Amino acid sequence: MVHPPIPRARPSRGGGHERPGGPGREARLPPAVHAAALELVGLLTAISLTVASLRHVIATDRVQLLWYDGDSVLLPLVERSMRLGLPFEWAMSPALFFFPEIPVYLVCAAVTTTPQAALALNGVLVLVALYVILRVVAAQLMPDATRAVRIGVSVLAIGVVTVLVLTESGAVASSLELASLLLFSTYYYGVVLAMLGTAAIALRVVRDASRAVPRTSWVALTVLVLLAVCTTASNPLYVPWSAGPVLVTVGLLAVTRRLPWRVVLTLAVALGGGSTVGYLLRIPLGPFVSLSPSTYVHPAQAAETLGWFAALTDSRAATSLGDAELLLLFLGFAAGVAGMVWAWRVRASRTVLVASTLSTVTVLVVSVGVVVAGSETPRYLEPIVTAPLLALVAVAELTRAHIGRTRLHRTGRGFRGVVAVVTAAVLVTGAAVVPTTIGAVRAATYAPAACLTTWVDGRDLQGVGQFWTVRPLAAYATPRAGLLQVTDTFSTYAWMTNLAAYRDAHPTYVLIGSRDIWRTPVQDVLGDPASIAHCSGYDIYDYAGTPGAQVLRQRVVGSATEIRLERGLGG
Image (cartoon, rainbow, N blue to C red; front, side, top):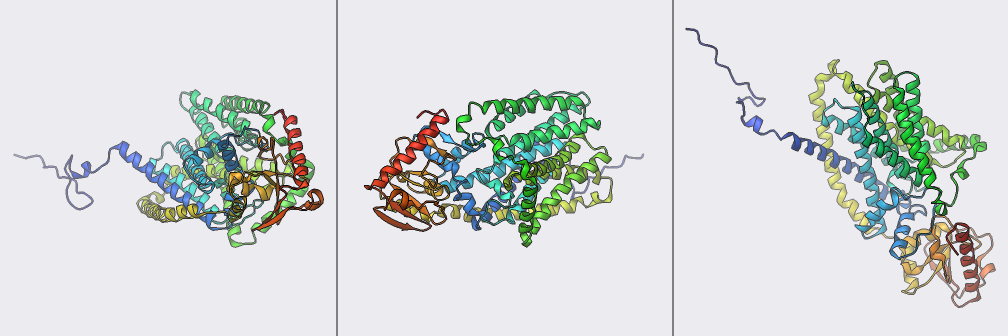
């Protein structure tokens, strides 16, 4: 009698045998736990890269822009004025920083003890938010990829940003060192995040429209409208940086019959309507805007602007690190172009085609727009750093989708090992850098402010000075110093300052910075001071008890009253 063969247990990788339900299966994590573990590893890796970026900035001259620049201390000044109970009568730039900058900083200040710590935490949160948005982008572009692959690509994008930051170390804001500006609270990070968030939602709309049975995600569209309204109301750069490039991209693809027109119409209504409402909201917010955005547009200076940026590029290319950054930026743009052509030729998914095309269009629109506008302001080129991250994810999906058709897929196991080693190295580095970074933040002090605090000696005073000298001192010295910013004629300088602080002011001293320019010597206007104190980088002219104090008060308070009346804030 022939007996059926006895089935043998399949050998395990370790050389033994596993039975159904044996140790191998028991060792596996539940799917939800495994997914959470992967997401946690990705987030921790992104945080490690973010802290490395922050540590580099703190260790170089770029820390001056992070903590002590006249523009960078805006949010600490806003938080201090709110803590002192002053009415909100701020004279901002065209960027109001209402969304999301001020709310985010107030949260950071609430959980830290110094402006330096709050600004550092703010920078970390921005890059972490960038990772989260890129993770959402990866989910839209790579629906068939494993979770590990999507996480890995998102971390890689943050790694690229970190490498760019590591090439930057200068203390000058008007340079092509653009990546580190993401860490700074007043260099439009809100619009950058909104730009990538808009791209993620637009990709969701395109993906929904590409299903076998097209559908519309009203939740996504509602979020998109709210994002456009809030961001435009706070900063009109949202339109040329984000809404415009998205609509140009989907319009071009619809004309070439790669997208249905209903996608264009849907996004046009959401982005156009949201941006329009945002602009309308800026009308009642007018008293807080110091200059109209049109003030920055000078088309007649386009040729000069092009030459200025060419010289700026040459200056950046003067060092090996500068060359490396310029090369990476060029490769990012090239990835967008290559991804667009590749996706077009292989008829890849619509989302991949949109992402790579949007990356290219954004870089071109922003670069050409800045030159045509005649604006010699490098920070308006910030999207050339972040838009190519969309292309990076798109090219990663194109590579993944086609790699299985080649012999390269056989190296997958070895590649995963390399990724695991690199991830472990980044996590270990992050763990090592975090304590030193926290220590550097806690130890940070602004010596010039300490000198002023010592001179004030607990008195309740008010003094004046020019913008670049006064602002960091106003943020870090004792609130009793009561600093107000003025022009060289002692008129109120209504630029990113709270006009409420000028009401019934009685300034009695003047700060004379070493880099200030006074067209008329201070003593020719106010007379001789009662005394002069010397601090690092500035002198303190004390006019208390002299006729100059009355002249000072009349000029400062009188000009501030006129400005408040012009803005409709009352006298």
